[in-house]
Image (cartoon, rainbow, N blue to C red; front, side, top):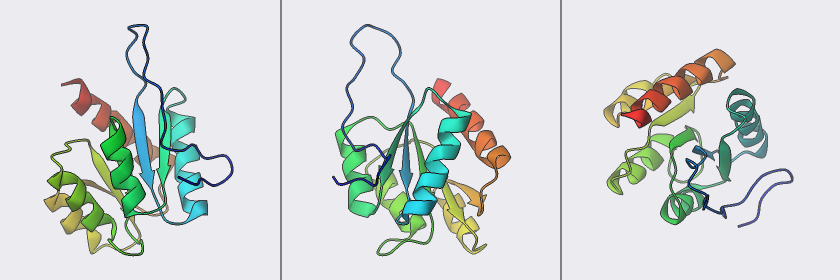
Length: 142
């Protein structure tokens, strides 16, 4: 997979020393600025987390097939499958990871809710992102 400068690809090495694995977040956004902004915000709020970036639906599904993903952040407006359609594809793989769909379009709210995904209003504030991450972490702990 090609990545933008400063982004990480899909390859990761699991911990072999018995420590809990770092939390892995997938950021799926077709635009480099949006992807970088969201990934940077996650890294600010969760410095220990590993952020994996995907430019399109195929890369997002490939990342999910290759490794454990704990949380998923998807931009709604994307070529091909929109964010809700990508979330539906992810749910069909029986992946229960918490999903947030970011959009400035209010019509995505109900569609996101139907997939047990959280809707985040664009532009995403650090407070809204932190609240999603905290709720998702609680869900993962149970």
